[in-house]
Image: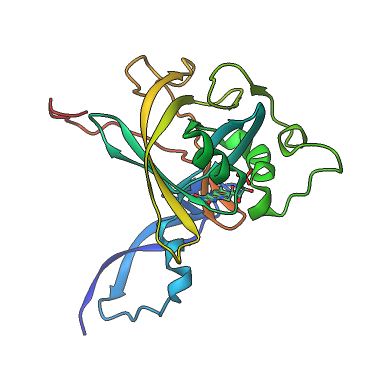
Length: 233
Ligand SMILES: Cc1cc2nc3c(=O)[nH]c(=O)nc-3n(C[C@H](O)[C@H](O)[C@H](O)COP(=O)(O)O)c2cc1C
């Protein structure tokens, strides 16, 4: 039986509650030893996506027939740098799916940890938020929105930045509850409080990251690597 070095993850006494290190809430790392043969436990297939945590919560704004809508989506990634193409997996039952499928465009913005309550309400079908009778989800969310910054949909005020996307392809499989939209980025704006003009960071924007269900996190540490090659997008 071999023993090796390991990082012990245990509850932190030094950190205040809900402060995150390495995406694990209120835990700290300490050097120790572990049995290399440690057994892993089986994770049910329908829970495996939870290993993708933490996932950054983005907001997708759409408009159909003059009716604006905003909802959080974390299954978003870049798939091409030149041209700039992103992919977003969106539940077919959502208003966002219906709007994008119909109008073929959306605006993606990047909220921050301080927007957590607003984002949670905007995710009503997931969080269970129920707007008061006769009040739209956006109005009941507590957020303030730019309604004419982008013609593609509303943008929450105070976000790190936003960009507009035009759908180029929809990937669907018959039995999947989500559809994947591939969309070309056509323009965007950044918040100079957090970003430089080339998209590098001036200071930590404290992105909002979902761990699982209603547990969220953000970054409290960032650093620059000692070196960076010249060939990067
Ligand atoms: C943090 C967070 C991330 C989410 N990510 C996704 C996602 O990637 N794809 C998706 O279909 N739904 C996702 N949801 C659920 C939608 O936001 C939710 O169904 C919402 O009510 C859809 O709103 P809509 O019907 O106005 O489009 C997420 C919810 C939260 C709170």
